[in-house]
Image (cartoon, rainbow, N blue to C red):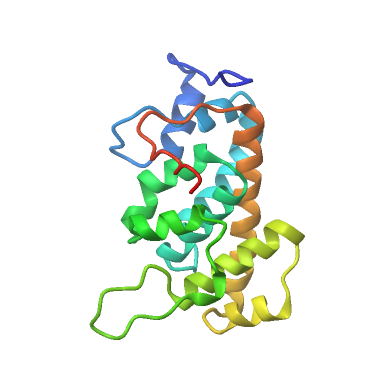
Length: 198
């Protein structure tokens, strides 16, 4: 049970409008528990919406890379709630397959072993770019810094604006993980279950 209960309908008109903004049109389920708890502090929720929506809807990173980063950050943070939401919805839409998502939860994955697929072939489970992202997320998680090799591996794939966005994205989803974990949010019933440790 969540430490702070999510709001339940009927919502005030202002909260109803805000929650509709947070959810994509046509979604077949209630607004996320996380959003409904956040709206117990509507001013903070409003400020958080701007950054979260900007990263998801207007970012410069390719959607698959964005979702790969989110999955690794939330997995390393032990946030089954947020990992499961993205693994069930945004990650598949961005083109991440089950093997790639599983790789984000496996701390034994060797970050430097990715290979780029040959043209016209099926993509490898973990590309060099994904390996660079994985290694960078892990370094940030463990040390709150990036070594020169980790930075150089990212620089091979991204421009300056994308690198800045990567750092903000990783930090943002660490914040979201703290929030969901600290609140003891129950996983959404439709979310992808977090894989058991190997």
